[in-house]
Length: 395
Image (cartoon, rainbow, N blue to C red; front, side, top):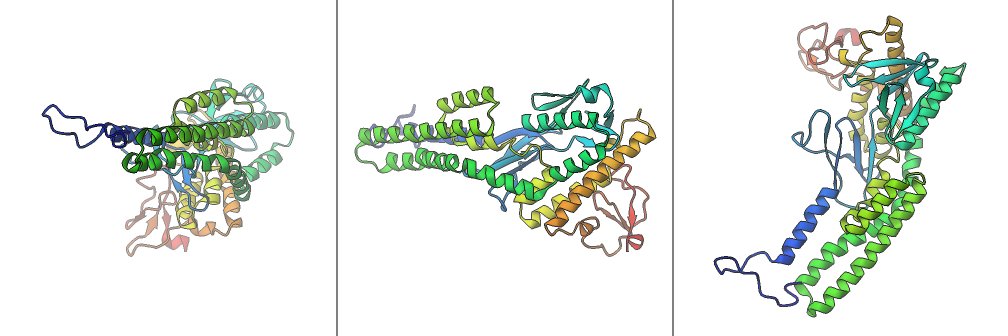
């Protein structure tokens, strides 16, 4: 520790003392490493929430830090916060079968009595259905979805199973209870993470600038750092074994990196909570943790996109009219389940289906993007395939 040990400042080429010492540069490097641990690179459609329950916010970043497929998500800098990642529902269930989203955005139909449905299995985090694979939101979510599809393929009354699944999938109270259990399991780990972060940066800088006995303070600082670091690694290992007993490979990898870098260990709870709610609908999770003012806009957009798909989100061109009707039914079933769940927590879903205020000269509006137009149009220019709604007809 340069100032404590009274080592002279490092001279520059011109013989002038450098304004930044080597120890200060070391702390700057550590800060940059920690900031890199607070960033996730995930698909653009993923919903990433960070913070504490009831005050969580979407983990956003400037649009330039990403592309159409993936982007950066900036998490909370406080290690006691919780990070939840929810993948968009890229598979839909109806009475007639399962719909999976293709790379071009269209939907392919897989009947329950087909070979693909009967041979469904988990492929890591994905669901394997013959030649199609679908992101399921984690190993646990993929296994549960594969088990559900197998049950549906063997059932003589699939509608009851589909309804029961949708009720669990969109249950806000269930998501809230699971988040509460998750916070309890990670509470000790998060406190240790906060202690480690504060000790590395806070105590380190204080000792560097104000400690009198340089070497003695340095050794005490390193010993305490090692002890808190060790306790954090052990707590993260125990939480991982308790929450994900079958993910031993990831556990050993995280243990290795945590033993190499204490700043990697500081964000251990984020990695443990990422897939904890992968089998819940993103809107149900958001309703359980976000403030009501932020939730309203998210719920409005989610329900509108389900009920009013654009052309690129509809059934593939080679599908029959019956399959297209079945896809509409699958969307409506999921939207109805979400609306019922939102209504149970006091949100007026009927008000979400129309604009908050009518512009003075507007005569119609789009039920998907809610743009208002002063001239009557049959189809929204922004949302291809979505017809406009007249204000006079809606009233």
